Structures are given as structure tokens and as C-alpha cells.
Length: 333
Image (cartoon, rainbow, N blue to C red; front, side):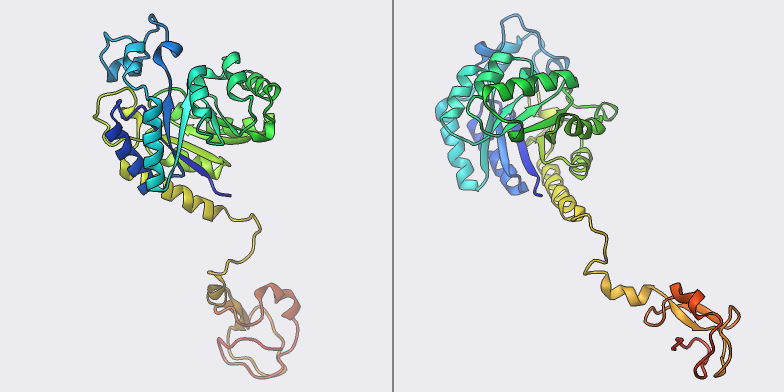
């Protein structure tokens, strides 16, 4: 099964459409399936008094309010149209997360066939109802949540009209970057088992290994932030992959998909040619005369594996040699 790889540009365009287009080019070059942005009206999602997160204070002006910081990253309808056209030009899908009801309605006009619930909206019942009322596939991100909250969100989504079969729950840790000891990838597996949903992983860790490991554990969707330069101003650049890292992550995931196989243990096509080379056969340990009894003193197992299998040892011991054998000769009956 192919993993849906979402290259999360987020707000790393810094409000600059030219920078956003460069991010699209990077995501396309890396081989991601979708490049994702964030759609919001700052005043609709953040109150004037809302504080910044600690990671945001470090990466931006600490005196600036969260609303003022985020307002600079708003994308207009025309901006969306321009970026969608750029994605079409680069042969990569455009996607975005809406953070308020006005933005939900804007994105619905583009009919992406997929919606995303960001972690911060998991407990926003009016938002969940509005976003999922049209029964399209849903990505439900679960940073900061416990299993009961995830279950409540899924229940709300189902009641809004979207069946559980269309929901993919993304395990996530809302810290930028996420410490390795806080990843808890086994929680992703347990979410799928406990709630009967497809699972994925929205990754905020440094590096690419956790995202690749998540695919090996069954993630069907991977979302990862990326940037052109981690030194750019803005809240998310420092916890984002560089272009070469994004490309390496995509390649790693595609390799893991191939490596997972169908689960049936059998010799692979590539190793069959090595089977007679690496396995062993019954051979004469020393010269054996015709009529001599085969014993532990005149038989052994050596390469190549083109003769009698050593697994027939008990069957052959005690039988008589049908002819003369020289030392190291394959035993024939």
C-alpha cells in the first residue's frame, strides 16, 4: 500500500508567495504526494490576548501577540488560486488545513476531496461538525489528546455524516521539535487497534527516521514540515526538514513500502540463485567403497546445496553406498 506523503509547508512561506512557490517546487522535486499549507483568518481563530507558545517566542518577536504573528501568514482566495496553479504546473497536489469556519468554506470551493483536522481543533465541536458534514476522507491529527478525546472527536465526525471508514487518525506530538522520548510510536498502533481506524503520523521530530519507522509500523499517511532554510524568521522553520532531508525521507518511505512485502515467507526471486551456493548437501567425508555403510564417520555436510539435503541425515545413516565415492563427492542414492 502506498503511503500518502504530505510535505507540510504550513506557514513557512512567511506570507511571501514567491517563497511559497519555491516550497512547492521543493516538495515536488522530493516526490511528495501533496504540499500542504494552512488557511485561516487570524482574528477568527486567535483572540487578541492569546499568548504564544514557548517555541514561537524563541523563533519570533517575543513582544508580538500570537494574533499579530499569525496574521502575516494569511493567504487570500487569490493566493490559493495562484498556489494551486503552481502545484498543477509542478505535478503535485495542493492541500491546506482550515483553522476556522470561514476558511473551511473557502477550501470547500476547491474540492480537494480530503480535509484535515489540526490538533488544536480536535476538541472544537462546532468546527468538527462544520468541517466533516460533507462526508469526504478526514485526517484527524491528535497532538495533546488522550484516547477518550480522540474517540469523542470520531463520534462527532460520524454524527456529522462522515463514516469511520473515511477517517485516518494521525498520531502526533504538539511540540516543535518533538523530543524522541515523547514520540511514543506504539500509541499510533494502539489507536488503530482500539478505535478501528486507519492510522498515520504527523511528525515534528528532528530528522527523518521516526517518520520512516512509522510507515514500518503501519502508518498510511505521513505529514512532515519542511523549509528552504531553518534560519529563516518564523515559528516553524527550526522544526522543519531541509530540502535534501525531505527528499531523503520520501525515498526512505518508498523503500520501506517495497521492503514490507506481502507477509508470506518464501525465497525471493533475487535470492533463489544463491540457494544452491549457500546451502549444503551430504558429501563423503573420506573415500567410501561400494557397499560400505554410511555413518557419522564417513559422511558430512558441505556446500554446494545441489545434492541430498542434510535434513535427510537420519534417513541416509545406516544405508549402504551404492558405489564408490571419493572424498568431498556429493552422495547419490
